[in-house]
Image 1 (cartoon, rainbow over the protein chains, first blue to last red):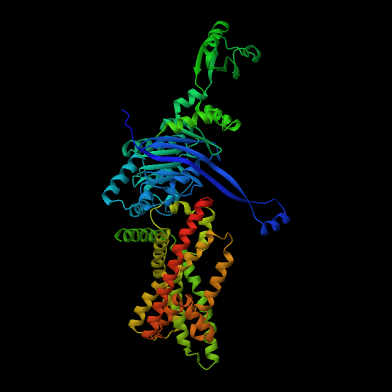
Image 2: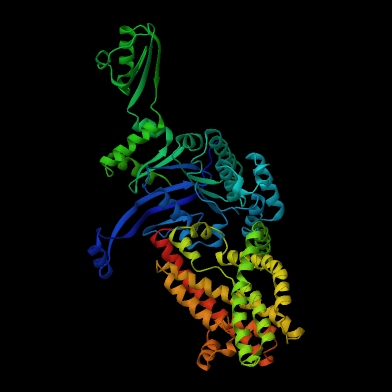
Length: 351
Length: 267
């Protein structure tokens, strides 16, 4: 059953413009810059708006340099917005009030806040003191995290002796000991192997279930997004391109389906003989795959079945990576165009 | 208040464990540190011998006492170098600190208190060897020693605040090294580190009395040696309190504005 929750995160007309010094290369340009420094304004986030309900897990996607981390840093209170406003749990993040900092966490995949030379248990204890966690609750939470993330051995070894994956698990555990109500996770699984990614994903899902925390997650691994997020927000060049359910994203932007065929006689068809059915994705010995407009799929499959000795035929949605690539490509051509308009309507419809 | 005490006690315990990991490196560093005062000591005792046994009231034994206590004060004076802020401000290492519900100053201070506790333990045998080698003559009584113990910690706190505040200038100036160098050069001359304050020319003594440097370095040594009366001691603690207050004011102001600037340009 779905319950209506008040928004935990509200972003309204939020923008961030960086002022970057610039000069030409060369000695003379260097000398000139001493007297008249030139600055260029680089908009990193442009007038974005969305709201995230308490307990929601939202994927925040975009290519490198899209403005994801800038947005997350504004929400965490590390960056002052240039315009617009953000409210998280009713707080204005840029004020960095202690009461706010005690209720949120930001995990960045490549940051390390643990005492390097000591077992993580010692760093956990420092977190207990800093976040004023009552001792009994701390021990209960700590032991639960150790169990869930399989950290029993790991937390007793000096952090410098841990593998990247072990360190990330410990880092996440340390960041959540104070049971924050809002989690900003910036590439939490970056550089980890598949099993470790899966373990961390399961932990985040479990935490969300148990604590009812709101999660905003950026990741380049679509498996993270598919496993955790029903809703995604896509940002590109600082602008919002899409905000809605993951399923809608696929329905809206996946205009083609992929038709895969395995031939019964093992022959290799020529590209010319396949061109009339759709766009060729791949051709191999005894098999081929085509990209076919959604509306044409029934007719094309019927023709294929009639024309070829088919052992197996499959019709698949394109991968989420392909869909998102398509969204970004649309954003490249027309960031203010139809895709953005569709999203803007969606964002406004939210609380 | 009890929450802050818990943070300090926990951080000191954890930092102490961390420092112990590096005990050999720390010991080598402290032994190396002892070379500097031994050089001064050899120079001054040679001068004293050439001038009939004393210079400005400092006998050979008094010089030995001065420079042996010097080592304790030197170790106690160590604070977070302002250069640390280059890494923090320019490379973004400050960001994780800003996410914690506690001012990074407290975390740093706890870290350095832990370092002092380990260093003082390592110092005991070093001091023992120097006492045997140089035969110092201590004139101070039990009260002087007690006041010395307090003054080293309060002096450390005062210096820690000032140097921390100085590091915050990094928020505004990218290449800050020259300012730091100037600060430490003046400190070297007017703190009593190279030369006891009493041996400085009058104008330098006046400057030393007004500036903070002497009050964290020369002042505790003079207390330990029994060279200060009650009034001088009170003035010394008063000056420490004054400069700690000035430093705290500067720190609060610079921090507030600096963090605003940091979060405006990119954290």
